[in-house]
Image (cartoon, rainbow, N blue to C red; front, side, top):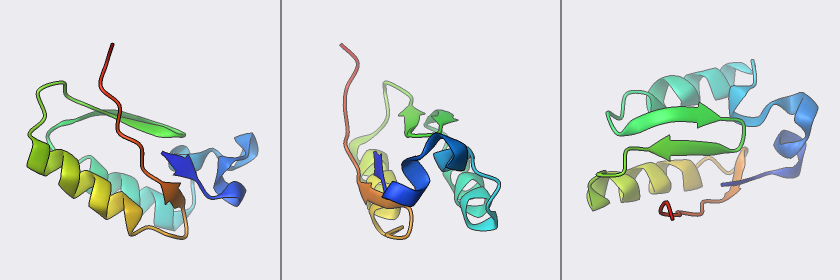
Length: 77
């Protein structure tokens, strides 16, 4: 995903920030069984994730305009 500029700086720590909004977002994301891990600028999902789950996570993240600019889905090579 591409984060808003204020969240993409190294000191902000992106998705690993201590900001209460980001902590709440992480709590919601880990409720999806397909989420394997979260890094400052990406979320890894299980390779066998259902298309509906992928769309659901993507839509949820796109609604977080204060944090996320764009969601990009990539499959492993």
